Image 1 (cartoon, rainbow, N blue to C red):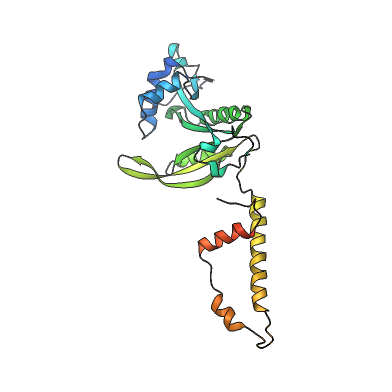
Image 2: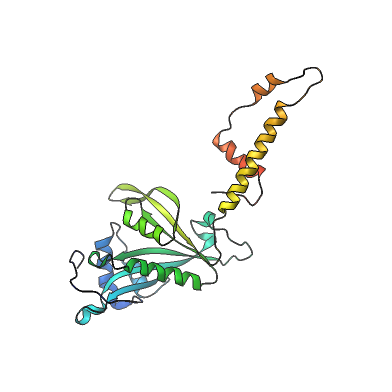
Length: 256
């Protein structure tokens, strides 16, 4: 089924994944992903133990095949303060129960691609995330060479926020991953574009004022203290520059 082209116009429907899908769900993951998942993962999916899922089926297929999975997405809800992207979501300290939706797996049978199924499954996830009052974002990882998936998530308004070097280990070889985030319900990055500009302007202004004060420092005995300035002034290291950017600017301006 993975490589066979379909000869008809499919009628795609979406439904929750259940116990009867166990076998085909395992097979689809084995066919579509280079990573092997433990049996416990699949049992948690079909029995809805801390994992929420949606499946895509083609109702135009004959007989029982009309209910066979041809696409799927699995997610779980995690506490924002305990997640790996806690530094990428501006959380309200007065609301410790804020959550995130983590997309575990997403796949579509090859012969059913180009029908918008993956996009529809992602929309199911983002719509669901928006219905959770405490949820601030949905996020996921994409292996660096999966260009179609990267394009898809960008098209669906996910933001690539970080590259994780050596994140995946597949058959003894490390691969990088991209981290994508989709903010919901007022969630946002700790550093908005406006805050970034304001912080940069403050930093430049502070630096110029500091240089100006040194250049125009007047001494009654020596009109200029140029020698002392030349000896004390130098290029900042990256760590010094980053530290000064945070210390000199507003306390709200903290970039990751």
